[in-house]
Image 1: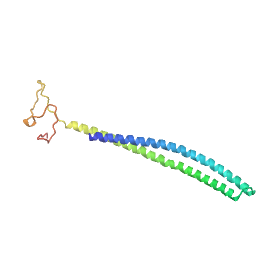
Image 2: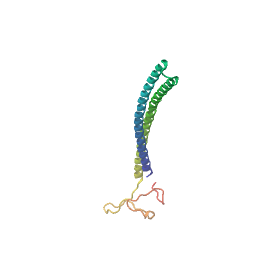
Image 3: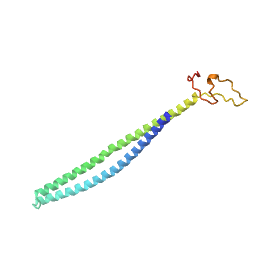
Image 4: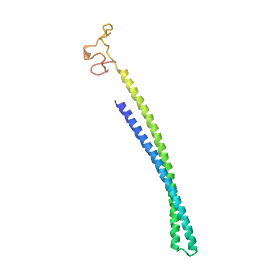
Length: 173
C-alpha cells in the first residue's frame, strides 16, 4: 500500500509540475506580447518627443520659444528614450523566464523518471510478496490427497491460507 501511495504522490507531483510549467509558458507568451507593445509605444513616444524637442530648439534659436519650453521638450525626449531602454530591458528579462521554464521542463523529466522507478519498485514489491506466499494443498480432491498433514499447532489453517515464517509458532525455514 505504501508503494502505491508513493507512486500516486509522484503522479500528483508530475501533474502539478506540468500544470505550473504550462502556466509559466502562457505567462511568458502574454508578458512578451505586453513588453513588445510597451516597447513599440515607447519608441513612438520617443520619436514624437525627439521631434518636438528639435522643433522647440529651432523655435528657441529664432527666439519664438522660451528656454523653459526648450528644457521641457528636451527632458520629455530624454524620459521617452529612458522608457525605450526600460522596455528593451523588460524584453531581455524574458529570456531569464524562458530559461526557468526550461529548468522546469528538466525537473518534470526528472520527476517522470522517479515515477517510473517507483512504479518498478512497486511491481517488484508485489512480486516479492507473491514469492513469499506458501499455501497449503487443497484436500477437497479425493484423487489428489495432501502429501503432508498440518499438525495440531496449525489447526487454524485452511487450504489457501497464507503462512508467515517465524510468527505464531510456525517456522518455514
